[in-house]
Length: 414
Image (cartoon, rainbow, N blue to C red):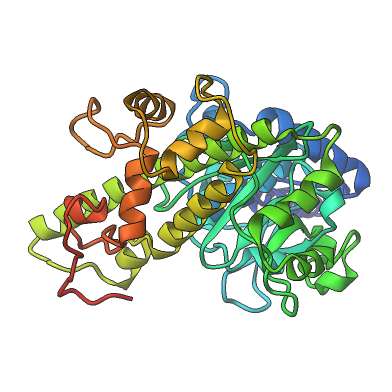
């Protein structure tokens, strides 16, 4: 009888130990391979939508999870791994030989259906655009697929969810600061060019498989340094570089008019992103000043300042300006992509064209009045004059260049 009780206790102890170290999800004997990558590509193209974290009815497990740009990229991979019981393993940001994976036992006492949420909240505080390079590797431009990513370390990242017939990437991205919100979908190339041919930390990339997580990029299946070679050959020029990508991926050619409209829509989207960044910064400034603090700290300044974004927006305007005049003389009674593009830059325009530009892309910059807006022409004029401030301490008028005087602040910048 004593022996039977002892055996029962051992069985119970083993069973209890398994329960108490269940991990976030059990991947069993599953592992990543080419077949699972194909399924991941199909899932990313069909399921990764703007409202993924706001759909309480269809996706209650993910509802309200906050995210910024890098968080969203990691979450896409983590959600698919979780739903298909595949292993997931990435690095802690700035911590060597330390990992975040699906076998972590931090939340064993929590109900199984809540562990992923807790895991996600834990993960997003420990990753960023600077950790993405060590968890991914660069790929050939002709191999860009849904499920891949683009990263500019320290600045921004995108998930790729498809390729159009003309070879343009379909992008999904989030913004800082991390919060539960809709992601932004763009039919555009990331407005960056891979420029790190030695470290290969930026550019178009694919996640490493967990079993290969510590192998260098050159040893990853599918590795290629082609994009850095192409970028250097095109002089790090955005349009020639993306033209190469288009030709490698397209199933049909992209006519000039279609290309111009694509760039115009992308420019509008990038400009509208700035509205959100600036409004969030102004809210934070009002909040800290209500608390008696006049200046943002380094972390807040990093979140709410917009120097790199404003520089990219200015460069995007320049690229649109180039293509606006590629088509030669056009009929003045027809309003198309090139006419709209020229209306941003041309010295004198008929009132009707300004109205068309207003209708095409009105930037509702005024937080408390959605009826008032500025257009792309007005945005360009202010960027070119240098009156638009990237400093989150600047007043509203200076943030948008409404004041003729440049902002000179007294708070520390970082």
